[in-house]
Length: 128
Image (cartoon, one colour):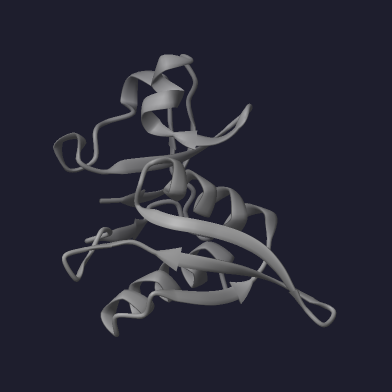
């Protein structure tokens, strides 16, 4: 299964039942995506932890008045169909209320940062 879809589904499921935090098996891409979500104020924190030999990520979700901060998640580029956009094609998510996460030659970054640095790349997902 796709690691990124797994992360997005875990976030969606944890918010649906009102969990404050959850753990998921660690990978570099999941950690980088979670760090971008922390930097853009969608989740509270992400920590790398070890459970025996297995490395995990502990993700603490963010709520405002009991309502999840993330209202939607969408995987754009899939394993069977990769979606690439140049700098000119990058667009705002939900009128600027959300972010797109782009895999560029300089690493993962938000669509807004990629546009500032005049970079394009693979559109990983959108969060709003």
